[in-house]
Image (cartoon, rainbow, N blue to C red; front, side, top):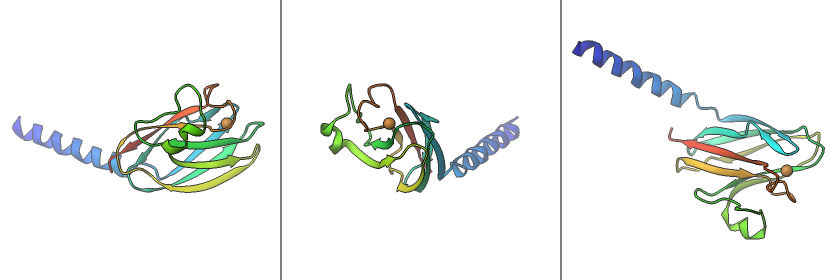
Length: 133
Ligand SMILES: [Cu+2]
């Protein structure tokens, strides 16, 4: 019984290791009016992330990641600038863009939104989940 238990623990540890190592560093996100698909992305902490953004909407969109523990509150505005971790300024409608950023080293759930006029307010938000490598 003890042998089976330690075997199971080993299997679980290996599975966790495999799961962690397979966290993607290339992410595809489609921008629509007014949402991100997917709206939750998971990346490994501290790794360089390649973000492929495709705007299938009729208006421009941004991709803004906030610092841990901050969000845009009710309304996105200039007062939020200090809380921005990283951003893509603008993806024009019908266009694609690839950008790279280094994921935060601190694991957690980071708030994402679109900083263009009123998009945050109509729910163009998402979540970046940073996991320990
Ligand atoms: Cu937008």
